[in-house]
Length: 189
Image 1 (cartoon, rainbow, N blue to C red):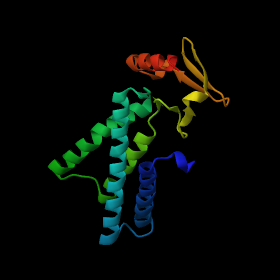
Image 2: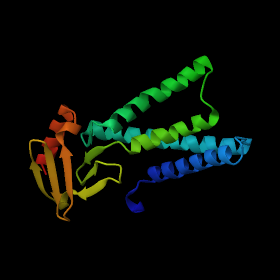
Image 3: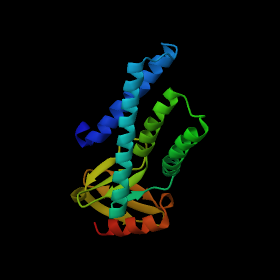
């Protein structure tokens, strides 16, 4: 399972768990008193999570421009879009007015952004494989040579693999232009 996860995602997950664990510990068992060393460590871990989230966003943007990524239009899409816009605005507001969040809450913002970006529902098709994240579980990865059949109906597209897996892509969850590109790409399989 860990062989398919890129290193930057492993770093993001590990740092996220450490930040959440440390914040929980200091506020639950230490009365909110955080020493300089621990605050510095949590800031470094939080910054690492922010970098991993930025790397994931950059990767998705380049995949979208290359025609490999097909994001789904649902709550995860709008939460990610709102987060990418709202979090820098929140930071600027805090700098201008001086009314920012507490330090521990600010440390958890990159964790939220990383989790939101990782849970974006999407389909990615490159020249090697099809990867579909259509739920909150891990994405389904299918090499293109394992795709047996692609059926199009009025409501969506069904992809059947040689291993008996079935991927259902419902038209209502995609923007029209993205659906047209996805349909064209799937027809070429």
